[in-house]
Image (tube, rainbow, N blue to C red; front, side):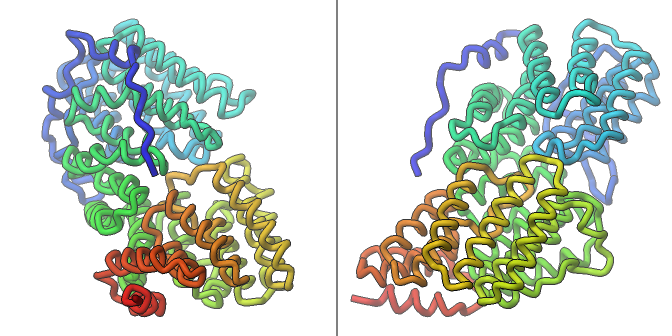
Length: 544
């Protein structure tokens, strides 16, 4: 897919780089060794966020912001708490604490229960009570307050928009303040509309961050947020340089080691994704949800390389890790066994995946969007095995989970999953045309949204399932078109490559069949499993 270039006219972003701007590139975080979660968090990149507090407080605050920019929440919280303890008049320490409480903006509002918003509001008041020593510091706290002030009467969306606008005003008011521009870009990117295929907010954030990336190549937040901003199929090429650099900027931060895999996954660079996530899980020491998140990405990548044994080993390692009560961990627990079965077309295995993968894992009912992955996999597996009754039970469970999900994005995703299972039920009941029509509608719905950052990709793309059914109905030319549409969005997906090869062969398009076969064989040169489709690929590649 051709990558649409970023807009070059970014005068507002250029204004942030005026002479005399705050020099992030020359102010390194002092290498204070910390052993949170067993990590040596020394190398975090270069950050300078100027505050008007004591010299010691400034040093600790810079460290806290460096940790924040790599989403090292527990360590950042400890750093800001230490600043508040050492300098009671440094109100910005409490602002830092509040920013940490807000957690990852790309998973808002899933991670913001009312009690957390209350704590953020209390921290903002503590900042004012402790002392804000400049109008700029007051502006930062006021911006934060816009997000929590009307939390009882306003939905998340308007409050997030208000925070984005307030941070933009700070960036415009203090053009030398690089941190204001970075935080504004972060919230702008996180406030994207999942149905906006013009990627308006992402383009705005990219226009701010790309010049900063050139000016401050060692800033962890700039590289990090560029990756998030371009974590979409048509934009991913823009994020490749940031992906290759971020792990070197902050090599002691587990999240910095993982984040490049978001871009590697979008580009189908599976070996790079595996190495990135292996390093992240090792650095994390299986102590937080980041390890589970890394294992899920790792499993997905292994399966695209026909490394089924390695995928199983990664799942086993994940289950021996510390159980973490976190939405991201719950999603990974559900997704990994689902991927292992579905990516291999092991339909009966998928139909019988247990609800809980291990006895020490908390009830998934706390996270409907995670339990829905289990119901989705079981529903697909049952329907593809011809068991319409069992599939209907899973579709009903999906409807119940949808109704229990208060976050609109996830409610829609679960509803799409229910539609996919419902379509496959029609196939199982001997209604192929109705099944195909329903799958087309589900694929269009899925394509109109975007994946969540918690997942490397769809559990199984609706359009790929549509292609599978077309192929089974002896319509190979139509199936080939759908498989290639999947590959345009999800490069180097094993199932789509294998399906495209078979569809082209059956359609008599031997040139395309040999091309896809050669691609599949090259991609799986390090496979650890002999899948039947690989032997088929060898036969197709040798066909004259």
